[in-house]
Image (cartoon, rainbow, N blue to C red; front, side):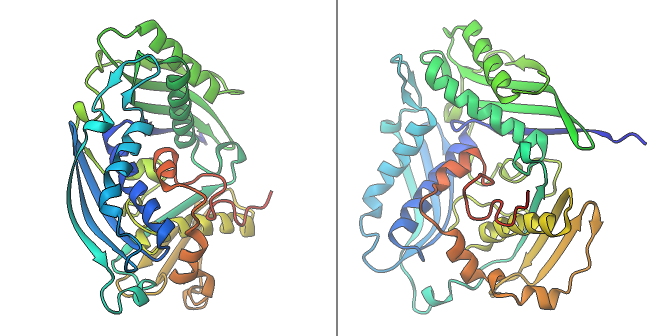
Amino acid sequence: MNTKRIETAEHVLPGHPDKLCDAVVDNIVDYVRTVDPLGHCGLEACCVFDTIHITGRIAYHANTLKDLKNDFYQLVQDTYRTAGYGRDAAGYEWGPSPESIKISKNLCLGPFERQERGNRHLSDDQAICIGYANNRHDTDGLPPAHWLSRRIARYLYELRQSKGAGHVGPDGKVITRVEVDGDTWRPIHVSISLNHHDGSDWLLLREIAEEAVELACEGLTLPALALNTAGSFSAGGPNGDNGLSGKKLVVDAYGPTIPIGGGAWSGKDFNKVDRLGGLLARQLAFRSIAEEKASDALVTLEYVPGCDGPVSIGAIIDGNPIDIDEQKFLAQPFLKNKPVSRRYNRTEFKLTELARWGHQTAGVPWEFTWWVS
């Protein structure tokens, strides 16, 4: 029987308008949780040209966020700047300039209502949360194509800073195609789109794209590479397309090989079950691999409004559904929303960086917790 299969996945650079919106709302969540760990954030953003619109709910302990309205501009400008907008090291201005950004807000912003803070451990929405992990140490427990697309994008971002000033813009996309055969895999094809201006050095763009692929594929066979196959990509970022937070759900999860639950993570604090449950499911998938000595695991958690933890769990390990005593398993305290939120809500890691480079990143509390070598 032929065991070979093709996997594809994509990633986008921080200057992509959708990821720009994800990073903006997560930068605000980061700000809120540093001053009030129980603060409530449920935010969305959309951007086009030099305007970003932010909507949603922010609640906090009285007086702890009195300066938030003034800090909004700094938070948004910092996000645009670190994504690569503004003047680069060669003096080229990639628009929209962070200083020119206009912010439109329609927020429910203020202190908690009576009893609201004490009920933060209860789900305020429904959610279906999917977590996946495999035992591939070389891909950080992720599907190979998904892992590779993220890795190439990270090298493109770094090479833009070190070599691409004056020529390579903040926006960009990567699509990878790999062949998986049992325990082995190999890259087949990579498509890269790099933002530039009309006078950019196309040979430099090609050099940066090739180097990023070579670095990402170290120790692997090099794939075929296609660069900017649609031609000019001079209208990039919000000047070329509108952006929306929560739009890159497959990029945030595990690529198109693995089903997703459907809830966005960015813009939400760690009491929101979309984010909390999605990350818990990833942790439980690693636990399943360790306990069963399995190759891969997919865990599904169901949350309903008003629950203090998942109300249903399903697991598929090495392709086989597992019979679980739900009542006994879900009663365990470590699965309840309050302890999970406390366990995950650590401020030493930045949600902005996770939004850009992957929520499944080494060092965060839901990754490799039960990993067994």
